[in-house]
View 1 (cartoon, rainbow, N blue to C red):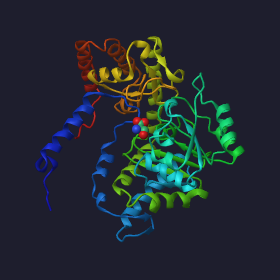
View 2: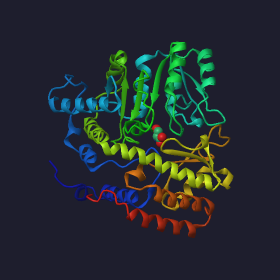
View 3: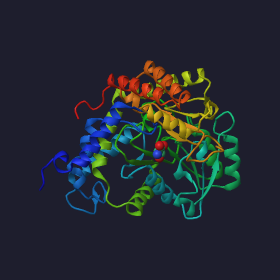
View 4: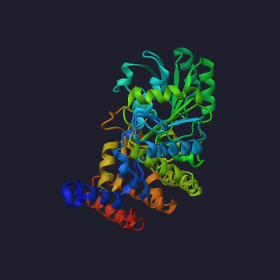
Length: 414
Ligand code: DSN
């Protein structure tokens, strides 16, 4: 067997990995769905566990030699149950989109109706955007937020009564406010719908006790493990016991083959980290940092969608500043600040050149940055947006960003 390191065996890939590490270390990562995992999580991802096939579930596998894999997967399940108070957990979904697809097929039949949030109001592609395959299978109806930026509960109820959905779906990718799960559950009870929450973005905030937890209320909860939860790239489904066998059968053999047990080992480690008392401080700081950004943007007359933030992210309409979301993303990239262009509610522009940018604080908070740094960074963002055509100014901000990142080192052992 070859024993060379990546550096010895494949210098081109090695060089790209090193450059990616350098990019992560020297820039400000503000895409709200991104984060930095711990060295222990990285170690599990690169472990020999990747070699093993393990179709099935702990104690019920279709392959021999799964005794250690069972230890790993069962621990991941038990820790997730403890974090969220879940009755049943499946840690095998490869990521958020397959988790959602598996959840739909677990409880619905082709042609059934799903009531989910409109993408431009903060929903997700897999919640019924016309470009996704699922819209060929299920009928999606889309609710929206009201002018105050709240989920329009009255309209949601009217739509539920009119369309009689089999599933009511909440949980968002660009929405920055709390979710009233009890009110939505009451509507679902009225029309006999199953409830599903996709908590991918806010799972870490829920784990840290900083946002409402839908797990004890809703029927099915899907999530990714790599956003605020700060684990490896992957997915997970939690549900009430009565849906357990349908969820498990839907994930495997319904949708997926062999689970990626190296990711599951890394999930188990991330869940151990999320159970530590200091994870609560982390979740609290993510929110405090987002509030600190909000304050500076308000003071500089930015239009914050939904009126501001209760979580880790901000959706900002930048058109009143004389540029588009794409222009802003590009200018900020040049300044060493990574955000993503994003649609705003009922955006008159296209997804490739929308009106907004979406940014968040989980990754910067992992680096140890606090309110003081957020105030400085919000000023850098404001400057980059104001002087987006001035390359020299953007270069100066990039240098200031680089000096700031030096004070918050990442992965010193790599
Ligand atoms: N791509 C993720 C995000 O950025 O929100 C959601 O799937």
